[in-house]
Image (cartoon, rainbow, N blue to C red; front, side, top):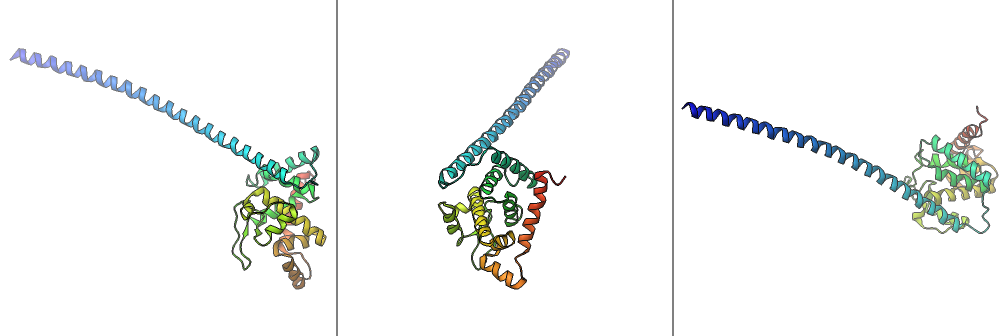
Length: 251
């Protein structure tokens, strides 16, 4: 009986040692597995970052090609901007990007500033107009509320009955979906503002006509005795305030 007990004790000790060894091995394996998992997570994060960088680079390249496409479609009399105009456009674009908290992209701002400069229009007037039209979102996909004339579309909020003839005035091909293209919309807004200013000679009339239509602007004048609508006043005042910052004369 004593031998049996002693033998059983040895077997128990052996079993305990074996279990301890197995637990140690499992612990080591779990530790290694944990390290491998952490390394795998790090690698996945690096891959994700590189993926986002590649997407950004691809998007930027596509934007450049889009701008080149517009450049090829411009009328022959288009005057290329010089170095000073280009640098000023970049400066204005950087400021507007910050002012809009990143909503109005720098490539949009550069394009807008050059288009406005080409036609002798203050780019800040165009910017403030786009800001009001989109409620400060600068959303290229914006669709305005339904009216008796239909909806307004895109960043510059053109109606389907005005978009085609303004595009024709700009020498650009027209398709409804193009109103959602920010560059196309910006160029149409500059062309239309240039047309309205040439027609009426001041920004009160031009901006109120942009907002209400030419006949709506005339009705507004008949009712109020002037063209100083809230729309025209707000855009001009905000453009002036921003101009003081951009030029440095407001400090």
